[in-house]
Image (tube, rainbow, N blue to C red):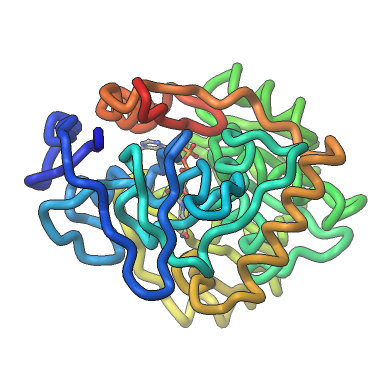
Length: 319
Ligand SMILES: NC(=O)c1ccc[n+]([C@@H]2O[C@H](COP(=O)([O-])OP(=O)(O)OC[C@H]3O[C@@H](n4cnc5c(N)ncnc54)[C@H](OP(=O)(O)O)[C@@H]3O)[C@@H](O)[C@H]2O)c1
């Protein structure tokens, strides 16, 4: 089968298109003929050996696939557990393989899997967004951010959804998706811009996957009892939090990693079913996914790292 493999850690050039034997399923595993493989920002952390989980070489990257389950013929999406997705055939745990309703196409199903589940849990499980609260979504035109903006709307009701993004086009997209305000996410002056976007008031919940100065500015913008959910370091710098500062401000910081949902079935199947139903009802607008040939996996990762993308990126293993 065709697959992208990494023999070493490094830049996008280490993503090599190769021929590999098909993987064999073990107990509790099933085989998926991959129609599309999802690209996620974390694939780049993993490529460089900087991911939360250690990277063992050689490996086929890719945390999620959409395709057809061998044996049942069902159309499915599946979480690979972090490796094996960038290939024509993937072996996945049966409990991480989910049938996709007819009303949801493969690319939409993939957009709702890692990024959709993350957005869902950021708002509910980790951020506990309540009606009337003001929410900040950084990188709001990205895969995870664009879903968080849309899922937040019914949760915070009359509350305010404030989006940040790096370009006017991305901010326009965030507004179209339902944000009440969209501002430049650059760290300089960010806390002040957030306050202005919230009519001078501090905000209640921030979803931050940028880190560094954006994280610091976001903490500054929080109201007492406000929560910041840290779930990524797209900006490349992790932060240290002062408990004194948290006590004084009466705010909280919580982390989120989707991996902690993998062994908790109630945190995977039901939220995914909810996401599929919302998509089928037309409540979620998913910008058309950008599809790359499997042989162009390096370009897909270059584009997401260069902040050129919006929405979901997928690889077509047939090309
Ligand atoms: N913890 C988890 O379980 C989990 C699960 C899924 C995703 N994540 C994290 O969530 C974040 C978003 O993931 P995604 O796959 O949905 O990607 P994405 O949002 O589609 O793309 C990343 C976005 O981050 C923004 N960004 C800010 N600083 C950046 C920098 N220095 N380099 C590149 N991009 C930068 C860019 O938006 P602007 O140009 O608008 O700033 C870019 O479009 C990532 O940090 C990812 O690791 C975490």
